[in-house]
Length: 248
Image (cartoon, rainbow, N blue to C red; front, top):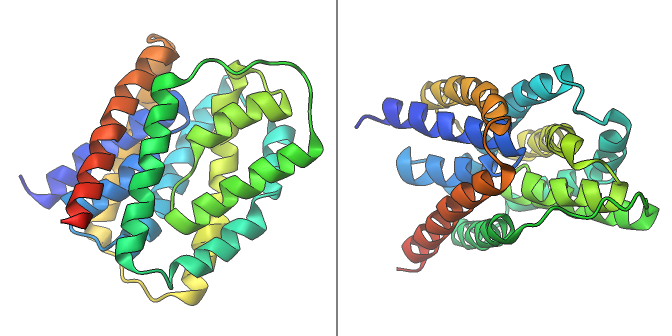
């Protein structure tokens, strides 16, 4: 199977994850770029930010049209993560590839376990300023360092910390993902000279965008718990393959 076809297939899967769950897409993007398309970890995390920005923007539009985005809460949450995202984006350029890969594999395990075990967070209506700032800063740092959107962290945090209804948490998380990813990408562009293979990135983005629209429709037909189990199981397999491949 050619790299072009693999890019199309991987992009479709990423789009489905982001569109249906508001999470998981970037966790799939980076290992797909490394192990299917031959990108280095540095190239993959940078390209992953680009793919996540474009795909999340498409998914955000779909959720916004349905009135499922809390703009003020999302922007406040994202604001706390902008500086950490920029700092982590600069730092990542100086980290060895092996360390980046192992850190990403560990994050994928946490994301998978979170999806497999997740229960709907309590919507208690209590908003804590310090907790919101801390959660936003942590999410920004993860985005900048590993090139992931962090939707699997953003969705429960938005519900539990900012009292965003679960029905709007997925769409709102996409807004947070885009803001953090834009800052992290700008930081990398200013400090690194990574060369990207646009001949593979563009078809990846194309099917990811289409998949995001399909994912939004899928979320209306399949229960979130079922979708989480499917993507959680996939992430565990991806994390295991990354960890084993790096250590051997």
